[in-house]
Image 1: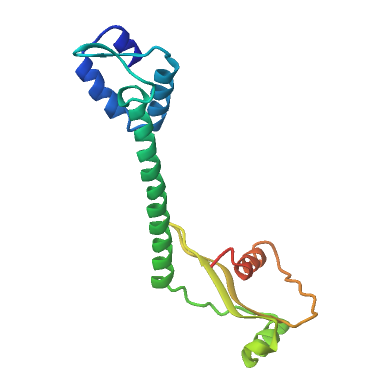
Image 2: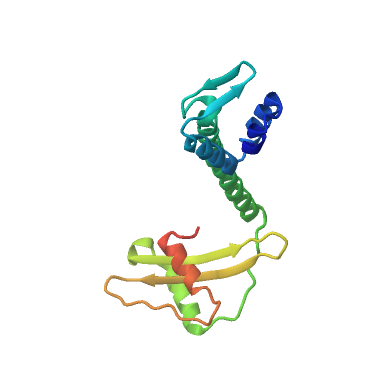
Length: 181
């Protein structure tokens, strides 16, 4: 645009093109910075040369205005995209119920699950009953990361969660700490 102004092209088409390009934030930043950097900026209009201030709409004011508007638009767009992504995963988890596949469990695991099922919530400081986490990814089968985990921790107890790689230990603790739902 700067070269076209120097070469004194068709001013009205340059103005329209400039306003159309202001939709792109990098253009606004570059154009506004360039216009402010020119200390004696002379705006060439159909009426002749007119001296303008650095923040007039024809110098950097239009760029600043468009940057402000696009900032709010993009910020709002982030909220819309995040809301739709959350809504989509929530809808998928509600409608795609993954059935429990009965697996062979150790005797200790079965005893702990039975103890938790028979207990009341006030019997433990931390009580987890039948915890389950399923990851839904687009285009592939759902992945069950944690399936029917039950345990209880009483005051003063030292607790450790053991398991092989990929057994769901980290996912379990992320759910307990509120990082995952």
